[in-house]
Each structure stands twice: as C-alpha cells, then as structure tokens.
Length: 369
Image (cartoon, rainbow, N blue to C red; front, side, top):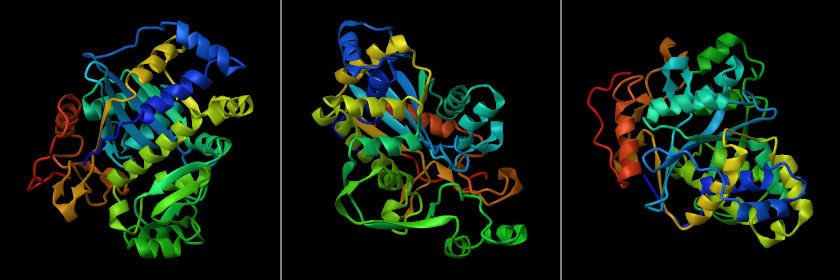
C-alpha cells in the first residue's frame, strides 16, 4: 500500500515551478538570484508539519473542467526529513455537498467561495488534517509544458489496455441513444457500456518497458483508471504512475538543456502561469524553494485510501455501495464504517503521517452503505 523513493516528488516539483515561473518577471535568472539571497516569509505549519493539498483538473475543453482528477495530501516533516503523500480517490462521496469529493473545487468556483477554500475544507474533514496550503494544476497546461521540454522518458512497469479512456469534451455524449437507454446501460457491464457508448471512449495501450512520451501520451498514462489488467487498474497503481511522470517532468525542467534555454523558460512561464491556482503567497516562494532543496533526499512514503485488494487479501477503508438515489445514482465510494463517517480514515491518515508503515484492520462484517 506504499512505496518509497529518494527523489523530489510531486510537491517539490510543483513548488519549484511556482517559485521559478509564477514570479512576475520577464527573466528567470534575476528570480534565482533573489531566491538565493531572500530568506522569504516563514511558512505556516501545524505541529512542525506543513500540509499541502495538491489537485489536478482536466481544464480546457474537458467536460467538468474544474473536477479534480487527482487529489493528494502532502505532509512534510522537515525535522524528520520525511514526506508523506496520501491519495484520496475522486469517487469518494462527500455528503456536505451531496456529490463526489472531486466536485468540491468546482463547487467552490461556482458558488464564489473559492475552489481551493472548499476543496481544503473537504479534505480537512475527510482526513482530519489541517491544510496549510493548496495548489491546483490544470492538466491541459501540463500537456503543453511536457511538449515544450521535449517529452518525457518513462519506464512502464506493466503492459496494459484501457478501453474506457474518456474522449475530451465527449464525456456526456448520448451516442445516439435515448435517456431511457442510457439509464438502462448504467447498470450493465463495462463491456456493453463501452460498445454502445463508443463515441465517449478511446482505447489507450502501453507496452512494458522504456518509452518516450509526448504531453498527451503522458497525460493518458497518468489518468488511465480502467485498465483491463488488474495490476494497473487500482488507485495505487495510478498513483505510482503519476509519481513516475512528475519525477521525469521535474528532472527535465531542471535539466541544463531547459534552465540554460531562455526561449524554453519563457514558453514554460507563459504556459504555466495560467494553469496554476494556489494560495501560496509570493513572499513565501523563496521559503518553499529552500524547503524543497532541504528535503530533496527525504524519506518518501505514499499511501492510497481505497477498497483494498482482494487478490492479495489486503483490506481497504472504502466500499462501493449499491447504486441508489442517495448517491444520485452515481458509482461512488464510501467509508466502510458508514456513509459520511470518516473517523477510520482519519486514524489511518494520522498513523501514516506520524508513524508510517500502517496497516488496515480486516474488513468489517456489516458495513453501512
């Protein structure tokens, strides 16, 4: 349920990009000089830890552009030189908004409360952890940025196929079917669904081994959620793929061929400045960059809140309840101890952040849907 690698993972990558590219300047080099000499604003923290919510959205022409496809709580412990990444599934039902939790950011944008504010409040309630900062990245900007740096070299762990990868902008297309037929297919098998809703989906395939990926291919690799092969169908596998891509992107951005190329830097700045939403203040950037450098060899621990793995008898904290009006007839995940009861999740998250290497007790006999 966890894996460890000595690298500057997702958090450091995001913070480095913010520090380098979001500064209001036409040249990167004066910024680097300023970062080296400026102490920066003291960062917010709770009990010696800095908790940051990392969100990824589809953006652009995607249906529901502000729905968060990726939700990660990053907890940094500078004194212990440890980073804990907790992935929260987008399909987790969140009763306060009567929607999946991936709608919290979008809901905040629509109601004027602020996307980050509402998303942070939701994750605080689910995890029991205070959120000090939030960062939202638009995947459409990520695609363009990857292409600007010349693509990424990724080693794919397993060959897999996904026949349900959504076509951008076609997520709710009827494919010539009536609403009655669409409702009927909602309970049919995935194979039948893909066959009759072929206008919504495309087939993505990846071979095991090293590959050079352009921006769109890299995005498909990290967003795939319905692999036919079980080994790549879990949220854990998806989380691991995301880390691979972000590490490769970080390495490419910080390589000499990028940092010493003013044209590439300006292109990246123009692309990323409109793709990032954050409540990190400009006078805190320098402190974040130095913190990322300080923790570049930190112990990394990653965990996923999921339904477990029947193949290995690994229990999970979530269940998939029967489709009903309670969940707007959507496919959702709920805590196994009861809808809206996040107490068990909170205990597990706290254990992972404080101790690490935590286990989940065997599944309950009578979970409440």
